[in-house]
Image (cartoon, rainbow, N blue to C red; front, side):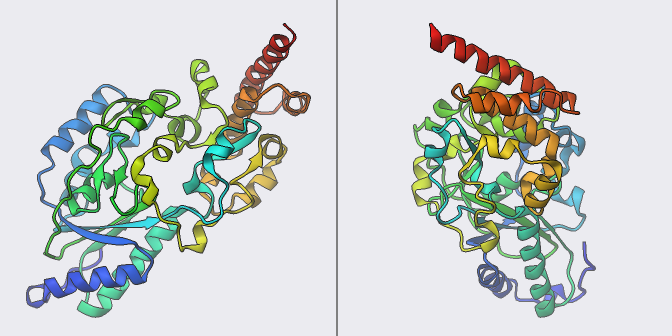
Length: 367
C-alpha cells in the first residue's frame, strides 16, 4: 500500500466518494460501488472453507494458500477500511454469434472475455489512474489495486458493495448489465460512505445449471471446478480426464454457456473499450487453422491476450480435443496426424485420443 495521509480526519468523505464514482466512469468503468472492509463475511468464509475441504477447487492451489486473507482485507493489507469495486463491460462489437460458433463443430469457440487484450492489465491500469487522481485530490493515502490478481473474494466484495448479486452459476449478476463484465477492486484506508447491497434476482430460474455441458454447477451457487470447462481448458495443466473430453465440444478456451442462457444477459452491454475488441479473428476461426500455428505464430498473435498465459502446448492440447469432437473429416485426420509425433507428450496423448474419436466416427458413418 501507499503511504497514509495524516490529514484524513479533515476530509469530506461523502464528497470524495461522489468524485471517485464520477472519475471511475470517466476512466471507462460502468459502475463503481463501495463496501465496508469490516462487513460480516462469516457465511462466505465458512462456505469457502467447506468448498476447499470438498476439494472442488481441483488444482487451484492458490485458492487454499492464503487462509482468511481473502475474506479479511486487513490481513492482506493492514489498515484497509473500504473496498471500492468496479466493473467494466467486455462483450466485443460485431463478434460472431456465440451459439453459431458452438454449433459449428469445426470452428473454435473462445470465451468472449478472451477475444481482446488481457483484462488484468486494462482494469488494473485504470484503477491505478483512479488512485493517482484521488491522490492528486486529497494527498497520499493507503491503497492497493487488484483485478483477479491477489487473494481477493471479488464476487463477494462486489456483492457487498451493491454491484450485483451472486448468480446460481457463481458469477456476479447485475440487473443493468448481466454478467459479461470484468471486476476490479481498490483497497483503501479511507472511511468512505458505503453502498447498500442489492437483492438476489435469480428467482426460480435454473437455466445455467441445466445448460452446463459437464454439469459442473452441482447445486445453486456451488461449482465443482474440476468439471468446469474453463478450469479444464485454462487452469488445468495436465491431461484432461477422458470422460470429460467429449463434453467439451469445440470450446478450446473457456466456456460461456451458463452466461449465454442467463435471462439477465439480454441486458449485457457492448464494450466501448478498443482493448476488448476481437483480435486475429478469434471470434470465428477453424480448429484446423489454429492447430497449424507454430510456437512463433502463437506467441506473436496471442501477445497481450489472456490466452497467451496458458502457453502453446496447452493451447494445442485444447484444440486437439476440439478436433476429436468435430464431425469426421479427412482434413482433420491429416491435421492430427501431423502432430502425432509432437515433442510434447501432453499434445501427443490428446492427439492420439482425437484420432481415435475421428476413426470411430468414420466407422460409424459406414454402418
